[in-house]
Length: 124
Image (tube, one colour):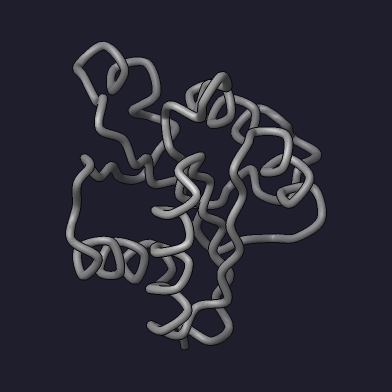
């Protein structure tokens, strides 16, 4: 049931982050947003999520580095959490570098229904 599923949205565009968080909350998910890698890391250290949405370009931070951080921290609570990348800048090189570490990708702009369907798929 969605109400028991926690989702973290990591997106530096405050308006888009708010829209995604609100959309997922309306769909029944417990959802938090983070606007920087630092903020995301703090949230990832304190709670287990059922899905994490990561923007690849987080202002000055790299979403790619954040994906790597999540996957390589063996002591982290979210090392197995499904990751869905959201970005307007997906290319073959990026996908080949992180493809094995993520479970899905959405290219901006995307439909909110598509996002909800993807989150539902990865939260079982």
